[in-house]
Amino acid sequence: QRGKRTLDVILDTVSAKHSLGPILELLKVNGTLVVVGAPDRPIELPSFPLIFGKRAVKGSMTGGMKETQEMMDVCGKHNITCDVELIKPDKINQALDRLARNDVRYRFVIDIAGTSKL
View (spheres, rainbow, N blue to C red):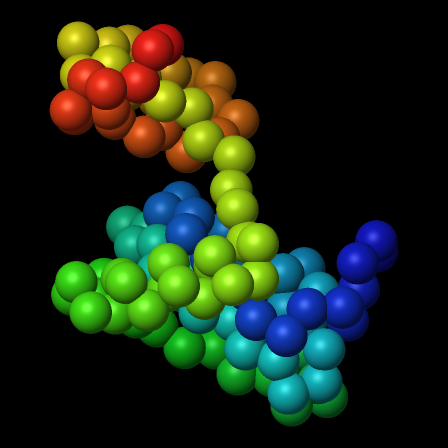
């Protein structure tokens, strides 16, 4: 598996049922997987990657403004970015339809202020 045992931390934002086994294999020994997605069914959590890799799985609720700013500061310092698909508010229904069809590659970000030229 490409990338195996290369990451210190993974932030799992998937809100659908999925197995954490392949994701855990990407973590280094003593790595941490933080689950912030909220699937409506239980997630598969195999024990061997946890035991043999001394890995930890944690959960987290969305933080407040202070925690969000701290996270943004860390991302800026380490040049951590993400790919998103920016949509206008009037395209929310189409975005939801695409989610239902699994026709989404990146997370949707809604341009509420309307400041971006889409």
